[in-house]
Length: 138
Image (cartoon, rainbow, N blue to C red; front, side, top):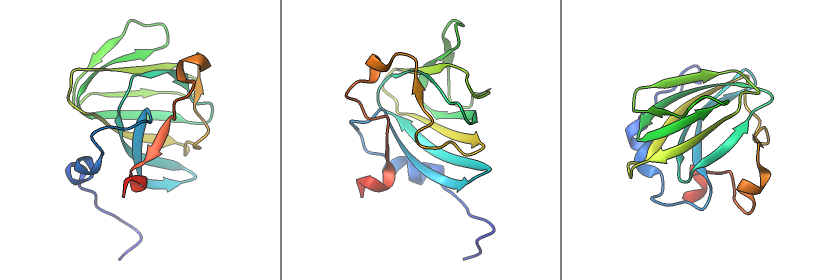
């Protein structure tokens, strides 16, 4: 296999996400280098307001509907095909709407370190795991 390129089938990957998860999200890395990481992830529970100190984030909604919370703006309803881009230190959160799985394609520049998730209200996530990886579900 040539390491210079890879192909991905988002539909096939999406079918591998479990129907339920104890963590807020389940993700899988498509690429992971110091300059940029790219992930496909599914949201299982409302994602409290948080921010990242070390990376900018680009989110493309592939399925589901949600209220996207950003800074102090009113919530914005997002539908599949919509994208939001924001800089590091921007407070954001997600509230899924309806029953369809909420799946995002995320690009973080530079790479988002796994511990670069800072919740505004740490009590809102007490006892919850932020992320598990699709590969952990066998």
